[in-house]
Length: 230
Ligand SMILES: Nc1ncnc2c1ncn2[C@@H]1O[C@H](COP(=O)(O)OP(=O)(O)OP(=O)(O)O)[C@@H](O)[C@H]1O
Ligand SMILES: [Mg+2]
Image (tube, rainbow, N blue to C red; front, side, top):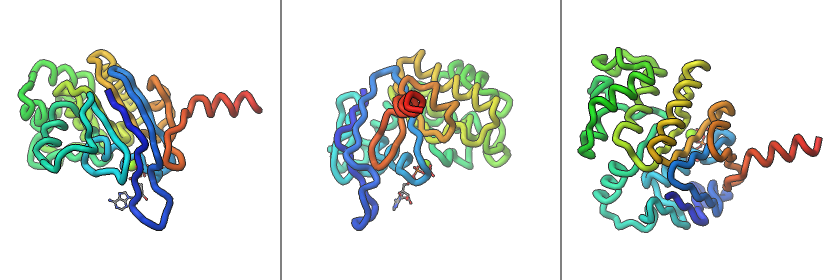
């Protein structure tokens, strides 16, 4: 459902491209985790997949629709994001003017598939039901992070992009939130790309990868190689 072909992206003409002929294919219900050094281009890659930015060259297809060769009509990409994508941003991007419930419900209401019971169940599993009426300014970083995860799932997207989804959570909460994210996507046939610095969160994915020198490498086979050659 996600195909990335020879993706190139540079922010500086004098340096090597940040993403250099990067390739990735992901099926429905499949999850991939991406680790890598700070600044190696992980958030940039998610931003290209979501159509917030454009690559220098290469293609990205989601459900056979080209994200890179789309028209300049902003409406197209907004509609595509609303219908297909769930995004957990590294900096949450919640609305300060809404309470927790309305923040989470936002995309589902736009898409027209708002389901109060489903939202309630997701919030229950994330341990944030009691926060429903709280204004955003009264939520901790970890509470906002869990709201951002609920918002990314509640409209039943076909692809979820999660950038450091547990970066603000303690170890125990991080485990249960990661479980929910992976399980919900699996149960709803949703593909999942998780960018994370946590090996515990990364290893739950079907495929564990590393972004290095502009391409995605299989992190598992690297580890196997190290242990077998030692
Ligand atoms: N819009 C932009 N203009 C210029 N440079 C940018 C832009 N966005 C990102 N960069 C640069 O591209 C590089 C990769 O940034 P990116 O945010 O993708 O890293 P990352 O792998 O997500 O890092 P982290 O793990 O710290 O979140 C960084 O050096 C960053 O400064
Ligand atoms: Mg980042």
